[in-house]
Length: 151
Image 1: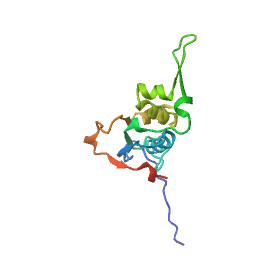
Image 2: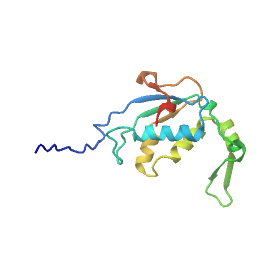
Image 3: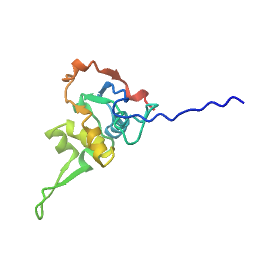
Image 4: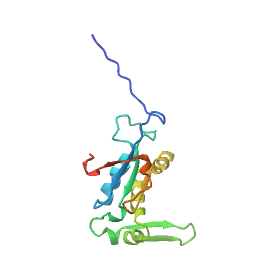
């Protein structure tokens, strides 16, 4: 009897093959785009995915000012924070936050989809969001990827 023994491969910091990817947010819906970006940053589509290791890719998002929200979310969706002082709860609608900084919508959406621990904080540092078509990472030779083709 021919028995093949397969060994489970567990990635670590040295063996993780991290790439640089560019995602165009032009005309994309915020939640659907953010979940795909979170999947890319986490590395869940890779064959050597390991839950406790940063084995995902570095993702550069361009055209963040061309993102869309469905329904009445521009007026109804609120982002709440607290200053730390009594009565210090502050809130912004999606429109107000978009006018202040359009990149913050994508950053907050992706951060909420990452793990809430030290690994999640490390993974979040692999996200770079830019409002225009230009980005600062041309030296890394990022590969353009169409998120609509990801499953």
